[in-house]
Image 1 (spheres, protein in one colour):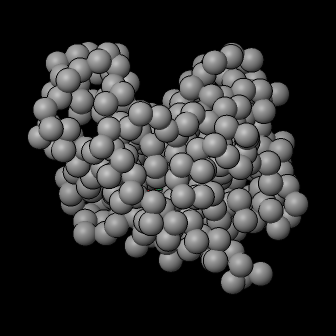
Image 2 (cartoon, helix red, strand yellow):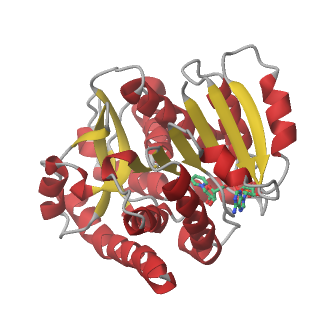
Length: 329
Ligand code: NAI
């Protein structure tokens, strides 16, 4: 049995993400949890002729959350409010921090072995919140906790290919740091296939990748942020984790925002990012989750400047998440 749970499954991301997970044939059971509408979403998806049995759970059900997460191999969290024009991801903290903390508490109690994929923003703070909750329950295995930053690399491929003329699906741009504004650091010097950009192109592309989410927020004009591209990105990352941890596929590398103490190689990276506890980098996935965290090497001068600007922002967001859980306990 390979049970996957989506917490926030009726939302803008939750519904298309649940659809894509239903199409993933590794999944045998798909549990959909939300405050509203999950029975309908589950009934609808359950008619698709792929293996996963789909079941909806509501907050108002007796122990709905407990039943949704119990026995889950992988839990994805897109629950919480999205941005409106003019908002930063940090503006979401007030509401989403509490939502994520309560969901993490249930995971710690009823699914302590699950791989956890956090989509809810601000990811730079919500991942430390989950970690702190798990620590307090004595069940924190940092190899199993991921902040989903896949959308940043998906956008980076698309935007970069528009300039370089390559086929976007073949373009890989490492994106490191965090998941908001200046903490998003595209490493355009390391793009494959190789391409030489002018300095102006690098500056413009970097800005577009950092603030790509704003284009969607503006275009949706108050109706939310990226949902469909995010569902694609979330399903891609969930598939990578399932392939590594269920199907035994070796050598899968995907970016994610993780706890750097998870493995020895993370401690090497930690030393180059002023001791930050969390950072996103390319992660090699293995049977237990995080297997290897790639170091930052040979950054261009421009990328070093981006890193310098990102570190204090990341530190603030991480401290804010940690303090939020400390204050409550
Ligand atoms: P949405 O408002 O459409 O959906 C959120 C869903 O969460 C709703 O169905 C709501 O009922 C549910 N929810 C709220 N509180 C809950 C709780 N306590 N338990 C279970 N479900 C609960 O929002 P959308 O567009 O789906 O975005 C969700 C989150 O994802 C936002 O925080 C957004 O900022 C973030 N996001 C993250 C991205 C990333 O790259 N990591 C990209 C885009 C969005």
